Length: 102
Image (cartoon, rainbow, N blue to C red; front, side, top):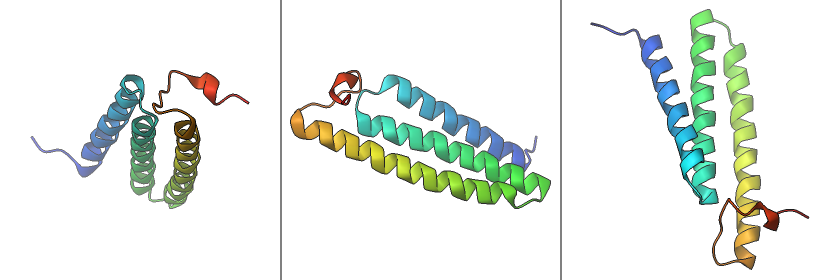
């Protein structure tokens, strides 16, 4: 049984997204949660590029670049919030969002 490259890419994107979802649900460390969110973003980028390749249009690749930029900005803001909370407390936990409220 042979698999087409597109099918392998779809299964890879689904597996990456499922691992990211599991990481967000199971982790309590903000850095690990951000890494899981980044994994989910990369899975969506893979799906966008695959759709762009299947339909022979460059729109998916440009959208993937935009998603990549927003994902990097999200990681910067999330790490800045985690560091701001970590300065005040020795232990950072995502189950205590009252610390972030202004």
